[in-house]
Amino acid sequence: MKKYDAVVIGDANIDLVVVGCPEMPAPGEEVFADQMQVHVGGGAALFTLSLAKLGLKLAFNGVLGKDDDGQYILNEFQKHGVDTQYIKISERNNTGISIALNSDKDRSFITYMGTNKEIDLQQLDLKSVELARHVHLTGYRGRRNHDDYMGMIARLKSMGVTLSCDVGWDDTGEWYEGIYELMRTVDIFFMNEAEALHYTRCSCEADSIAQLRKHSSHFVIKLSSRGALACIDGKTTHSEGFKVDAIDTTGAGDAFNAGYMFGYLSGRPVEECLLYGNACGACSVMNYGGSTGIPDIYALQQFITSITTV
Image (tube, rainbow, N blue to C red; front, side, top):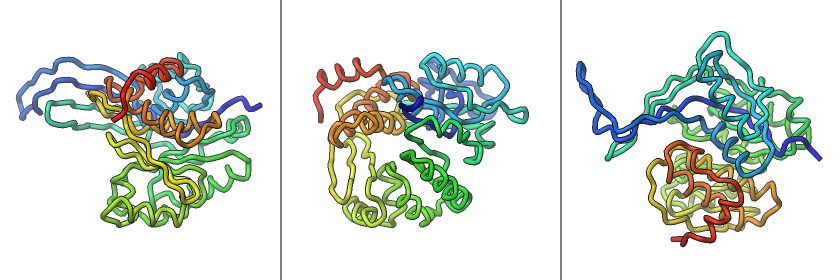
């Protein structure tokens, strides 16, 4: 029996959510928002909190500042049973902050990377991995850290853990084709529909799936309100999303990943993994903050039985 169901390495920051901001102020002007809320942010942190709320044992590897924001994140992790002993405290940078401006029209972000700039796969405490049965990786940066990423994955695989990875959006616009080497190595590969189309250079979903099948035996594509699909050993399974009123989509993909991995680590069939993923994504978008709406597993199951799918 392992101490941790999963170990996570990646970003953690403060999300300052500005609700009801009608417009960005012009120079010298002031605008008023309906409210401002502080939440834990960062894809890796949101995944960790969501999965911990569902009852699994988690440990987090990341970097926080020696400041009140870092302490707030530590407190939230500890409140939900996440082991924080592997988190590094920086003397150089403050904890990162992302300001999310939610207007009636769209969302905009102002982000200070802070200590997230210091994250390096080499900081993953391998002692934590020895105590885990699964590792979830984030922070892939294409050509910029591909070789380091693949080297660390080889070390992790040699330790007998299963691996999942969500690469996220490529802010360079290159969509590095080395991603296929990564896909062949990890056990579960997550992406959203737009990322899949960009990486495969395809214009439609069917062609993209056909291309990804050549490189991965288990990948998952998130389709927003249309649900998600998983392709395992060439067989594709689709699960419809839940019809809910969305007020904040920040972190919905990370919540989905947590729900799917809960099913996977609990030995559930792929249909249930997708169901839990879609349910977590739906719960996430109904609340401000990426993991705020994620309930415990009992409340999640009640949600699944009480709501009608699309």
